[in-house]
Length: 81
Ligand SMILES: [Zn+2]
Image (cartoon, rainbow, N blue to C red):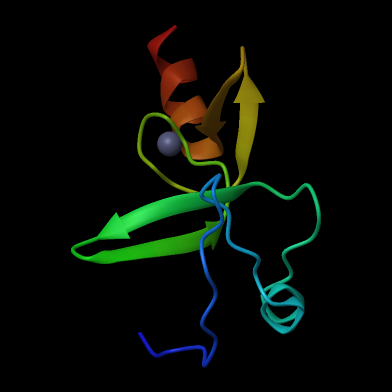
């Protein structure tokens, strides 16, 4: 991890403005979901990508009854029926 060379203050509601250059570089657009991760003393922002509820995979994930499931788990489930 390296510093982005930017210092911002947290406002009274806990908000921080991400510099436009970083939003552009990491393709974060208005309305995009962002996941907040923690690692030790660090807070990490990541573009949100849906993960399979069963195996955590981010490959070929689709929605099923408001949950995310990957193709591999879907195939395995179909084998059970
Ligand atoms: Zn899966």
